[in-house]
Image 1 (cartoon, rainbow, N blue to C red):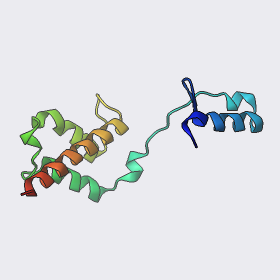
Image 2: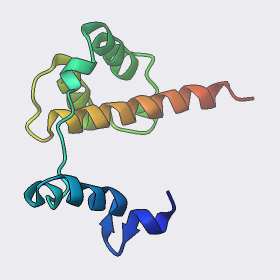
Image 3: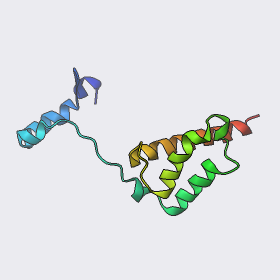
Length: 114
């Protein structure tokens, strides 16, 4: 759909909202946007957590080239152990861990470029 049909001012999904207004009760059609929980614990298994721990905290990790380990070790451990971290939600820990994995993969790729 063209942008002009999707957005009007600061209101998004114009076409969907008009259809909803015709088909749904007003109370539902006019509800504001809501977030949703990320089922992190259902997405990852023990094998993946173990791989993440070894990749990011193992002796061959290149992350210490960019970051102090004390800055990210607790995040990775919280992710891998499944225990809560007082600073971050489970989904925030997941996002930060995936970010660290992305950096690790980038560093590994950068090391092999001639």
